[in-house]
Image (cartoon, rainbow, N blue to C red; front, side, top):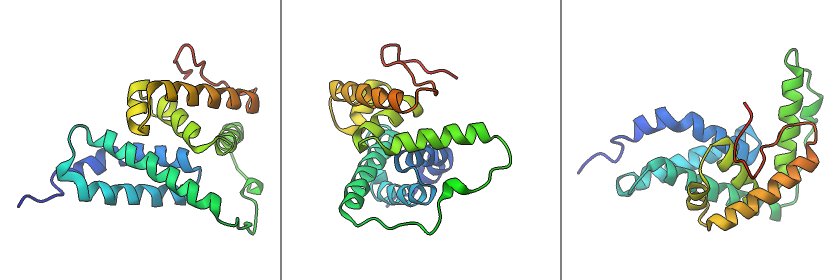
Length: 173
């Protein structure tokens, strides 16, 4: 019997950083993102030999579904109050970048999970509408709708930060 890890180790080395970035943007918390990616890689390893097509697309689909499942479970729990606010921590340099990143993450947290997933997959992972629909398990029209609503919310929440226009599909670098 062939080792199920054949090719898996190379995939993890090559794509785990990008998948961790996506997980972070879906969860907006570093530890949660690492835990989420670990769960995804465990599930991916079990199915590795049976994956037809691109393993990264399959991994992103698991990632998105697991993030949505976690969000649903968390929304049913009583919230815990942190002992301190992370926003009060001092930052030595690049304060403007950190402030923008914090504002974007805060705005992303305000989006419903499927809208957040659509924005992350489309604009931050640079997937096409069809690929995003495949990962999310919905139609292209649903991706367009989620993206449009999410971008409208982000534009109103972040008026000073550039948000990509939904009709051009391009990003500013």
